[in-house]
Length: 326
Image (cartoon, rainbow, N blue to C red; front, side):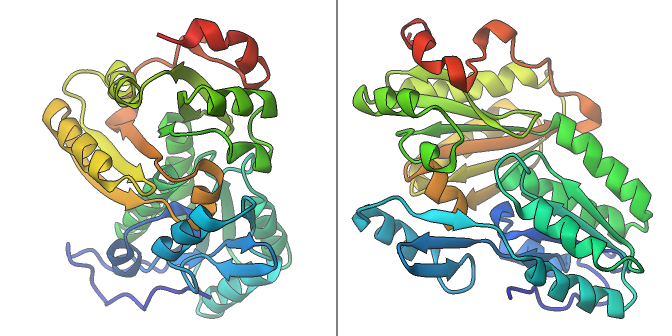
């Protein structure tokens, strides 16, 4: 298992370490120093290349994963943690008397929440709450981090859970990908749309919507235009001057991600900005070259949802293709 080392008695900012512990999974891609500093427990998912199985964050690095992905004849598959994986973590914390808030990747994208719920139900005497983030990557990561900070401030388990529930409704996750060929393997988007997108070399902006599913927002011919549209979408959703919490994410596209981060810092009132590389499990479903954002405004100040006419549901993506191109 991948466990963070025990936290010191006081965090760097002077907050006491809480008796409430936060558990998340490896798809949060939180910087390791934050995982350790807030004593967040991380339950890993797995990725498989043929008969070879690897535990994310344990026995395969991001660099090695993307090297193998480039040489693989078939797209790798991924799997959720087992119930036993969660029981090991929950049992350890419960024996020490810790209430637990367990926050995980969207149930529409993975069975991780199901494994966590089954494990919780086998421990009826423990105080364990499981939350479906309806998000992924640093969208999930920032929820786990917020929960850990709330715990450090002495908030109760119901209060922390309610705060995270609000974030599940305000968190926005957007991605630009080079190809849609990786997504059909997970059943997340129509195969016909993925084929046409690959043939035409169209970069698609993807959004993890509030129902937790990945949908195509727009198909754009050039990558430069796609990245520009990513910023425009963020600008449309953040009221001027509103403090915003942001994470910039990438898969083998660090230079573009750093440039995107600099642009965000110059345009927005950033309360905090994180930089994160997507690991094997999410990388297996979006592919190398992906650049993404996760963000939310303070006090629910993120702007209105995407207008309905701009949304392209996955089952209509093929027929809408021509109209989405600039």
